[in-house]
Length: 402
Ligand code: EPS
Image 1 (cartoon, helix red, strand yellow):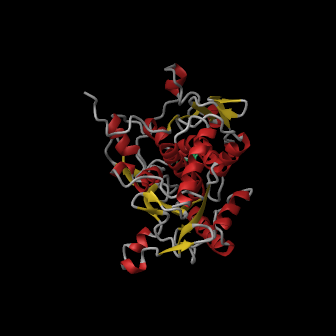
Image 2 (cartoon, rainbow, N blue to C red):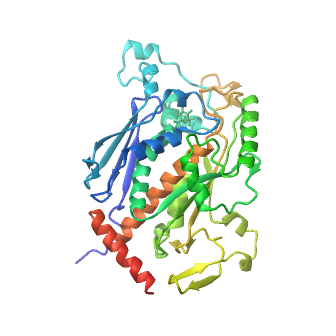
Image 3 (tube, rainbow, N blue to C red):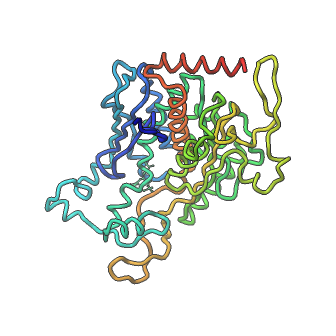
C-alpha cells in the first residue's frame, strides 16, 4: 500500500555553517540553488564587507577582511546545481593558533586559560551547563556572532537568486537605544541607497536622526557599555502566493520569524506593524483592498500587514524587523559567579563591539533572503534558472489574468 507522506522529504534550499570565532575560518554549505545562476563574486565580498561595517564595531573588524573562497558548486562563474561550499578565513587565527589548536600539544595546553566567569546574556553559563565544560571558551567560540559571516556569504547567493527574479532585499536601522525614526515609512529607494555608502555608519536614512544615534553609541563607549536597537528588512518585488496557510510550519511569517530570531542578540521579531497592531482596533489595522485596472493588480492603501496575510505573501513589500538586545560582552562587567569557587565575581571581558545594529540588518537581509529563496523554490521548483524562471513567469501571468 502506498504510504501517505504528508511531510516534506527535505527543504528545497538548505544551508549549514561551521566554524569558531577564533578558529581557522567559517564554512557554509548551501544546497538546492538551481544551476545557471551567475555568481557575482564582488557582490558577495561587498556584502561581507557591509557586515563588517558600521559605527561602534570593535577591534576585531580591523584585523579581518572577510573574503569568500568558493570551494565547490560553482564553475566558470555559474552555479552547477551541486552543493556550494564557501570558506571565509579568520585572519585572527594567527593569534589563536595555540589556544584554539585542534591538536592536543604541550603548546596548546600551555596556551589554555579557562574562562570561568560567565557573562550574563551570553551563551557562557547555559552552554557550559549543557556540555559540562568548566571553560566558557568551548561554548562562546561557536555562539559568537562571528558565525554570521558564513550566513552572509550564502545569504548573498540567495539575494543574487532573488535579484534574477527581480526581487530586491534591503535593510536599515529604525531605532538605536532611545533614538528612533519619527516617520518609519521610509521610501524603499532611500533604503536601497544605503548600499552605496562606503561605510554603513549607522544605516539610518535620516542624517539628523543618525547623528543622534551616533551620540548614543559614543555615550555607550564612554560608559564602557553596549547598546541595541531595531533593524528593518524590506523586500520589494515578491509575487503574491509564497508560503502557505495549509500547515503551521509552512506559514512564511513563522519561517521568517525563526530565521530572524536565530540571529545572535535578536530578542524579538516583528512583521509589518505587528506590535502597534496589538494595541489598535481592527478597523485601524487591516489594509483595505483596491484594484488598479491599468496595471491589472490588487492594491492596498497601507501595508500594516508587512506583505503577509495568512502566512502567504500578498504582493506588497515584505517588512520584517529584528530587535537586538545590547550585546552581552561589557567592558564594565556585570556580576557573575566563578565556576570553581562559586564566589561572586565580575564577569569576564572579551574584546567586543559596542553596537552591531547595521551589521544585524545585513545579516537580517541574508536570513530573509535565504528563507524567501527556499519559498520560491518550493513553489516554482526548477533545476536550472531557465526552468525556475519559466515556471515563475507562467505563475506571474496567471496572477495578472486572475
Ligand atoms: C564578530 C562578532 C562579535 C565580535 C567578534 C567578531 O562576536 P561575539 O558575539 O562573540 O561578541 O566580538 O570578534 C571577536 C570575537 C574578537 O576577537 O574581537 C563578527 O561579527 O565578526
